[in-house]
Image 1 (tube, rainbow, N blue to C red):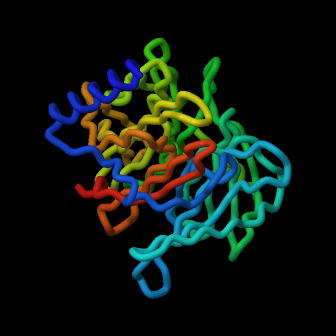
Image 2: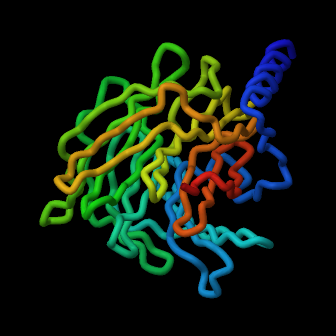
Image 3: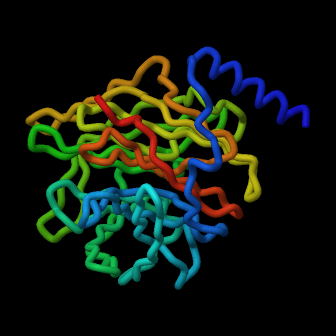
Length: 305
């Protein structure tokens, strides 16, 4: 009880400093799963509904056993949120933690497993087919990945991903590299750079400094961070504006992290593992993996310029 009281006091102090209100009202979240097999570990924008009133996203689940769901489609509207599991066709990954649409290639996605294997997928109707897979480059000792993002600027594409980090003793490592596909379809990375990152919130010993990444159209880097004290919680998380990324016409990737990340919102009792800027809206789609509590989604206005 004393520990929980101290944590709540720290939240209140931070919110006073930021001049914002906590964004954790339960009625603003939509439940999309009721157990540890149905939480949201990563989010990718798929498109608008036919009438333009809703949005479709793909979400990955961090399941590990054969036959368990790996990928679902969420249709999110003002009045409803529907979840449809997709059939996974191909080599089954263990512990998917991120998914991202491939720029300029409709229906194609990259999904990342925690140990650093990238799966190239073709999604048609209710089936996701594995086209190719390959390891990330420059994997460090003990790296545990929860995030992946593709950025398209100046006719070039770059990839961002991160070891999540662990508490005060292990900051996250944010990786960046130019990205292409080999002629036979395998993902390829070149020119890897690294930056250390510590979350401004939460800051306890169970903090995962980077649990997902999204980049706005103008190049702002949004990062989620999360604290996980076990399968039944309590959880805590935040979304922060962490800096900027640029990709030159020659394909050079430059990451400029803020000295102090700007916390955009805090979410006590939720573990955000998915952040995705929705094109043309300024909205971020957030997803949680709350273990035995399942998963929740909502949007927040974080992606405007």
